[in-house]
Image 1 (tube, rainbow, N blue to C red):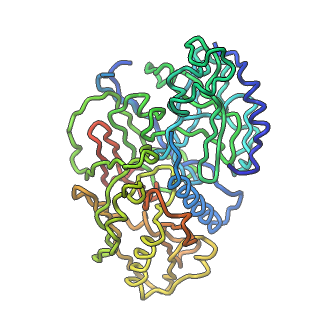
Image 2: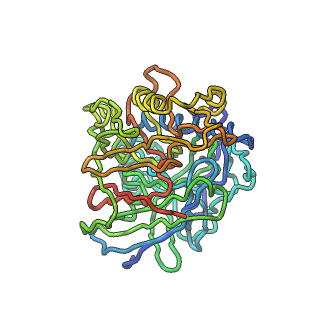
Image 3: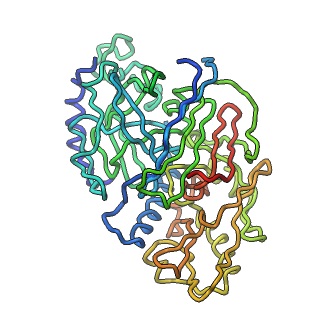
Length: 468
């Protein structure tokens, strides 16, 4: 956690917070998904913004690569809008409590706990982003809800985050194993690449208007955060995630392009509840099975198996051992909506970037732009009437092909004379970047794709769409 996080205030308020006055049918849930409005810098310099996004993508990759983890329902469908935002994430609006309080959440398939900024005392350090006043961040008010309650130390849902031995931490109980122990579950502290958050766990109603309510949903009431002005809704694979708690059989989204950052343009995210195993495939979608990493530390992530990477018609000679996790869990590819740019470990990235350099040899390198943007390779395309860029394609286990649109892997940077590859890697060559997934498929590469997480059939589906 960043050293600037006011940890003393965090611990002190958690002691105070223990005295809080806390007092489904077939359907489709649909919510809006939109780009996030916050930038990681107060700068309007496009080079600096890209550098911040590249840096945060690499920092998140480090976090994911060194990860420390922890009923029969009839089919129904829920829909929610999904909005894109300038600092690289996409948000949904969700309502908690009785009466419901609506807040925005970053949609994250790379983590599982959902949490919101909580109470009037919420403190967010290093959160002075454009369009954000840290003193006016919308928060959830527990004392205005009649349905919320703190999670007890003996509650099985406390084990989801802290493991089966959490009862040994119930030091204030005469008998920590007693079901009558009213001590609360320990406070949580979670790291997200460059940011972090901490607070207490609640059981609260999750409400999808007009009449869909999920009672006793486990959610974090964050008291302090660092560089996290908005809450996060976790779509990972752990028990505390939204898909697990709502018994989703499937969820899907379509990410509008980044050019709609900070606008009201959104797309729908669909949540299908139920545990049915209907094997129907949507026509036009390519499917590949999810892969279970042998290391339990990485079970939270959605692994898929890439068979080969093509630049133009040339297969990049990436070792097969990179594409499938070994017995130690290292290697393989995950799909992560919380990462902006796709991350590749340096050995993979160098093979891919060198192939682009080879096939784009008629363009000169824009080294200065590379230095200030954090992206590479970049090419000067001034003086060329037509830009000749080779296609980039991922081929997955099962035969599915993801042929990326040009805008999903190359972008104009600064003026119209320079284009850069929108894939990142670690700048160093040490062991810090090794371990965990070798490739992290970020949301920039998922733009204008219909993406489906078919949990009931353990598969990942995708197809090009105009999401706007």
